[in-house]
Image 1 (spheres, helix red, strand yellow):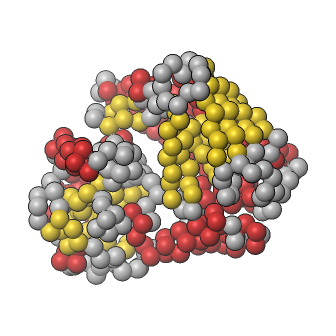
Image 2 (cartoon, rainbow, N blue to C red):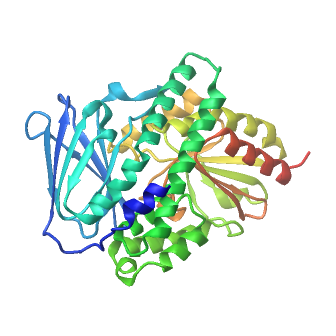
Length: 389
């Protein structure tokens, strides 16, 4: 932690119009014929671009960004993916801050997240400092995930608990480092982007406090305006707020209307056929469903097949129904369709799986992001209180 203070003491405020646009030159050794995918936020929405090589192992990405943005760069090499059952987990992405300047990336295609980033732009360098401090933890996390995946596929449970605990500890270390950065660098535009990246971690009240501590220039930027909208949107699903009504035809052809389920305890599960932790959560959730269904418990699965694919709706439907069958899911299921109702936006979904527990009075009582034994135990404890024997 002491390194952080030394690293950020020379923080220079961001100059919005330093250059007309950006040029990101990527030298990715061993890229072969694989494409590269970049993803980032623009005005609160995720944008995904697929980049092709200019020449052997060289990619040049040009454009213009209204504000600096955090970007993830992934090599689309499926041989590097981890597979758990029918779901997959891509290899780690390289994260960097994109600004209207020249940026050079040198990396190995098989571990792009460890690549180097060169630029003269102060905010690009500032964010890269965060990444370098976290690099040992990122490398250890990926190695542990590979070992965890190997054990799961071999049905080997020895040492799994220790791996899971170490992964949790590494995640908390990363979060603590970012929170310390927020406290030490209120004048940096990078601070706004780090706050944006911690939106799902910090309580919404704390995110709002830290947002209000930003300079007007940051708050009034497109990114700042998008973030405060998300903070306000997140309040709609806070504990004690009434459920957001929705209805849609489900997988069985019948109408799924959450208003018709009032009086039941309802779990709304945002997931996807492509999402490893989503599908890993299903066995434990099936046990809870069997235990509490007769007591007035219902689950509504909302599958976002758009989140990881630009496939047409027919192919999304096939992947969705296949996953339901493979995982043996017996509860209500609908597929996310923003043309009907943008449930991802209404419920402010930023990660998968995200679950909401609603009590018999139609009020939110719990929000769960991710999948772990601890989160599952918390859910079961809450269900036992709401639906006692």
